[in-house]
Amino acid sequence: MTRLMPWLLACLPLLAVADAPAAPGPAQRSAENHDASASIAPRPFTARYRLEVKDWPAAYIDHRLSHEGDYWESLMETGIRIARGSERSRFLLKDEGIQALYYASGYMLLGVGDSYSLSGDRLTRLPDRQTALFALSRRIIDGDCATSVCDIRYLDHKGREEVLKARAQGRSRVTLPAGTFVALTVEAREADKPNRRLVFRFHPEIPGLLLAVDYHRDGERRSHLTLSELSLAD
Image (cartoon, rainbow, N blue to C red):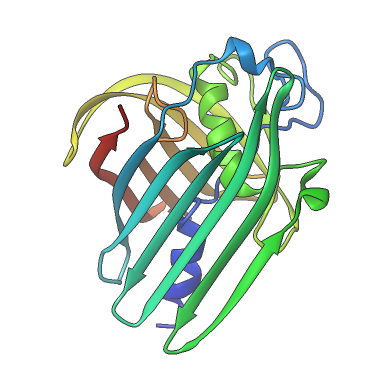
């Protein structure tokens, strides 16, 4: 069971990636340089995802994106009978881009757990992984990372810099427990572990909403996440 808890924590943001390329070009804009006013407007939602991890029972992740005054908050929570975890971030949408404000996460396993947090001063250069997930989805909706690979940098829950290489794969139609949707597909690999591959499927009109995510390692799918319920705010 101790091997499952890191999986749940990692899958809360689904190894989420930021959109801060090391060397931005015309088709490779960073979050800081991206014009937020030109992007599709976010929309509050409440979603539930079903997460299947190889050799473990299925778990559910609840995801809520809400507008709290001046800032937005993304909250993910998950749990099984003897373990639970949560992760949240707060960020501002500005004309010049997206600014992460605060990040916190924690888990409990058999009565023992840990917690992590990143304050705004730690998030000045790179966003946390929850803010990054939202930012990446907006970037893909805007058509970025389609003609070339984007080098992606973000901070994990302990504030360590991580790097992925991501590329958009186009549109497809997916049928899920929550319904049938058009999906924007993105493939990403860890820069120093090319044998690990993530395939994200984002909603084309709702930034931050995941339709499905697959994690592959050594050519084998190790986890599968799908949208099972969705509620949109009026």
